[in-house]
Length: 287
Image (cartoon, helix red, strand yellow):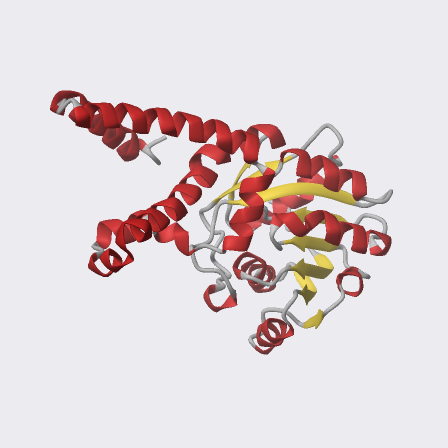
């Protein structure tokens, strides 16, 4: 397996994923120097003190100047604005990639902002936790995790091979998927569950927020992802709203059907629904 190497890498957004990516590059000797950029200088200083990054800049343009690998790990809603700010710093053979949960039109937009000689390759590691920030950063975070890479007909083949090699060398299981198909898939298996987790929390609060003190492990497990960054998931939901709305309509139909079973005291149908769901849940990871 070819091992990639970069003289200078820029991490735009030094949170859990960005910090873990930096640590993984360093641990595997894939980079000489890592520069961080973020909105909070305190966080950047902490990242430098912990050896996650080697230096930092408060200006994304300065942070990207001279880098041959740039990773976007900010909320996806900020990608276009930052790309416009840094594009004049992108030299020949610079590879720009990301860890965002939305692709689709965003990939096309990012590709169009790349100057000649610079290449964008969309990426989405299926790793992380409900908690954000560098406190839980881990060089082994991506080992064994799936990573979706979303090439288009415009993707540079060598850049694609390099980004693929990075993730494979970090221990990820790489799958190539069309950007639009990616968004359709993850609207169902990621974006919908996050939205529902937020809604469950607010629903209980509307009933009586004092009930939350009586929560058991089942409730904690079900709503764990409601601890995720509201800003991050706001952007994801809005950028993938059409697919997400389709998923929500199907979810509503399932809720309506179960409601009918309850009203009719239809225990047989209710149990069949639960059995189907249980079998599907137990089948995850079997293929």
